[in-house]
Image (cartoon, rainbow, N blue to C red; front, top):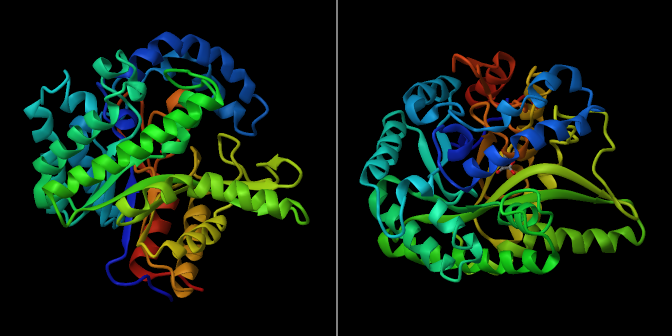
Length: 411
Ligand code: BGC
C-alpha cells in the first residue's frame, strides 16, 4: 500500500452560487430570464448516453433557476459532518460577494459573520478551509455598472478581498483569488453563453487583462492584512495530446496559451498554483475532445490519468501545487469511484516523480447548480434530493475515497 505524504490535503469543493441557495446576483437574474430557453435548448443533449435518465430534469425550466440550490447556507454544519465522515481534511468554498457588499462600500457584517462561522465550523472539525474569493457571480450594483469591465473593477475587487482577509485573520491560510479566469472570460466575454453574454476575441482579451490585474491587486491587498496567507488562482487546465507530426507544434502553443497564460502573468503574486482538471484535448489537425467511450452524464470524455501530465508540466514554476478541482457529472455513480482512484493514482505518481503537490479537492462535495446546465448534472460525492434537501452520500465513491485516504493505494 502506498500512502500519500503526511499532511496531504484530501478535500472537496463547492462554490457559493452553486450550493448556498438564496443568492441575489447577476446570475440569479440571468437564470430567470433564460430558464425557458435553456430548457428547450437541452434537446441538443439528446444523443448523450445519459439522455433517458436526464431528460425530464433537463427539459424542465424550473431546474435552471438556482433558488435554494443545496441550501448549504443553512445546512453547512450537517455538510461538514458528512465531509468529516468521508475522512476529508480540506474543504474549498467560495464567498458570495453580493452578500458581503450588497451596496458599493457597505459591508454586511452578518454575512461576514456567517462565513467566519463556517471557517470556525471547519476548524473545529480539523478541516482546512480553502477560500475562493470570487467564483464568477457579481453583486447587482456591479453587474449593472459594467461588471468586470467597470473601470474600477480591479480596485473594487482588491478592496473586497482585503475586507475578507481582515475578517478571517489567521483563521484562513489559503485563498484562491479567482476561479478559472479563462473559463469566465471565454463563456462570458467570447462565446456569449454566460452573463453578460458578450462575444468576440477583443472582449475576451480585455477580460483576461482585467482579471490578471485584479488578481495581482487582490493578492497584494490580502498580504497587507495577513502576511502569511497563501494566495493563488484556480486555473482550468486541459491535458493536450498531440496526434504527432506538425500537431506537436499546435499542441505546444495550445498548451502554453490555455494552461499557462494566466499563471505566467501573475506568477510573482502566487504562492501556489491551483489546477482544475476536466478536459483531454487531442490535437490532430483540429481539436478532438471525445475519442473515448467513457463519458460523463454531460458527454465529457473521462480521462483521469491526464492529470499526471498537467501536474508535471506545472512543476517548472517552483511553486506548491494543488488540484483545486477535478470531478465528473455521474448521477448513477458508475464511473466516479474509478475516476477518483485513477486520479489519485496519477497524482501519487507525480509525487514520486518529484512534484510539490499538496492536495486534491474533488469537485464537488454536493450536487449543485451547474450554471447554464441547471440541476441535471450530478457532480456530488453526496447526492442532494431537490425536494427534501436530504443528503445521500454516493456510497461507492465515498467508500473509495475514504479507503484511499485511510489505507492508501495498492500500486
Ligand atoms: C467550475 C465549477 C463547475 C465545474 C463543472 C468548473 O469549471 O469551477 O463551477 O461546476 O467546472 O463544470
